[in-house]
Length: 407
Ligand code: PMT
Image 1 (cartoon, rainbow, N blue to C red):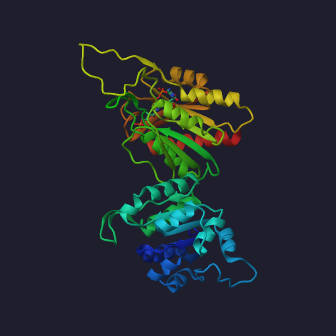
Image 2: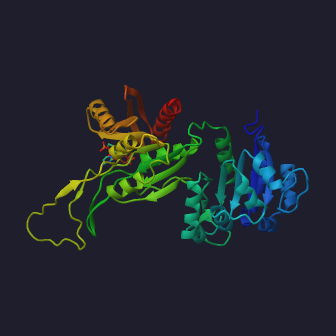
Image 3: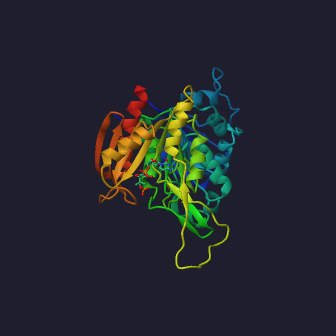
């Protein structure tokens, strides 16, 4: 059986040189059993003919929203309703901008606005366009609405530049489509919030207190949640890692910033995972000017930071009628895992707590792997042996999804 048999995919092609690669993508989707309806913008038709796509898809290609051939239906609504998935490949900066702003001025953007099916966007453009703040904002806006991006590759671009902006390979886009349509989606329809990275507590303009969190565990959780069908917001403190595509990224610095960013979103999310390493203390005074060297010793006074995880638990108690997020805390320990983790679970009123012994090789800060013990109110739920952080993340979400669905 072909993996996409019975699935209808609307393939939107916009006007960039990479439009020619959409022919290979269309052909691959058809060979995997999908029924593919192609919509081309006027620009796309300058790069590749509708006849090519009609021949490959074995269906008429739509290019004009007013070209209504069947009086029984309104074509853009009919195709939007029929779609199990919409793919836009290549997606130009222009079409991404229109999607982000709800503009519907041709067959493709009108269908996109009418579609309720999941959407995969594969951008292709010049590297400077891809890095333009307007494009970044539009991409983030769409990601926050659940649009999944298959990120462009890096290499020689048609415009002569070398950089990021080349359309992902048709094979990769087809695989993302197949994974979306056929993979497990235990978080479909859920909104989740993930925190990642280490907070930064400023001493003066050039010095700060932070920790060794790389953000990898939080990013793996955000990526796995995205692939499981959730709309993901990633609140991200200090990290050198690149966040996953297809999620809304909110950058913060300090524990206070993270506290504000998380609390502001409560009531609008179904789950919160606190994988970030949050400083328990911050300098009592943040100096505006660099502290000058003076005596032989320097004493820095620290004051307590808000406990964000605990604040979520308190918010849930104070708002009984509201959408209460399923709360997953982390516990970074160096021994006595069960004792400390279950104490944190109870004190911070979590639904699950993931304890990692950060003194073990392959676990905790900075590594690509982790070793975790997941505790619930009833005690140990599961021990996850040394595995890639992505696998640990998947297991955590599977356990969480089971409990969320039960509740
Ligand atoms: O980022 P990586 O390099 O991949 O490393 C992953 C990790 C080791 C950072 C991660 O797996 C982890 O354990 N994160 C939690 C680190 C931590 O702050 O643990 P804690 O035991 O000090 O805090 C317990 C929980 O309370 C955590 O969910 C933490 O986010 C939260 N907390 C802590 C303090 C505070 N002021 N507010 C909080 O919300």
